[in-house]
Image 1 (cartoon, rainbow, N blue to C red):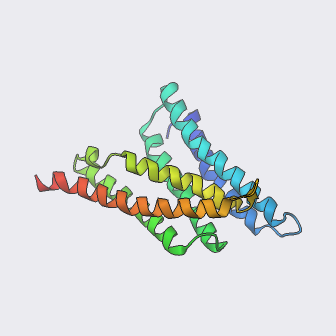
Image 2: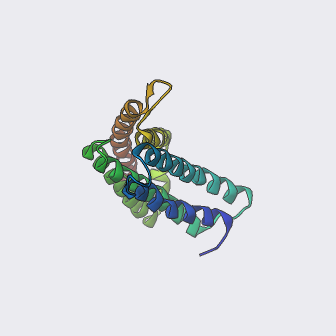
Image 3: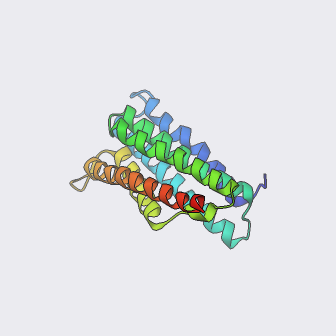
Amino acid sequence: MPLNLPNLLTWLRIAMIPGIVGVFYLPDSILILGEKNLIATVLFIAAALTDWLDGYLARRLNQMSAFGAFLDPVADKLMVAAALILLVELDRTNAVVAIIIIGREIGVSALREWMARIGESRSVAVNVLGKVKTISQMVAIPLLLYHDAIIGIEMHLLGAWLIYLAALLTVISMFYYLKMAAVPLKR
């Protein structure tokens, strides 16, 4: 495991997950709900930014590694899964939405692993649809964590619409990846 700045940022993202979740378990005498919402949101956004930064630095500093390529998507999936489970527990999103998104992430990861083993990883490379899904869920989650209104705009409502969009795109992109994986298998 190469210890470089991009990998350290990925480990930092993983280390931030207990903070995002744990802040909601602090007694109200220490933090009121609005403060918990804000802290969890800031931590999630900071963690999401490290996702971009570690990839940028890995390319810029020429510190790309097989371990980093493995750990980065694992960190992303752990962060999203933890946040979705927390949002279900806080009754800020639907369990079905969380199951769809988390289940798809596990399924597509397994599909990519299998396709890589048979030498067909290009068949299930990330596409535009997957990127739009990721963007919508990575914007929705902080809005749902924050939960309060900002300048009269209900962040929860906006986040709810975006997470439902992410769930829909999740299903569509899953079928797309399954279709793409089927092509080399027919040869």
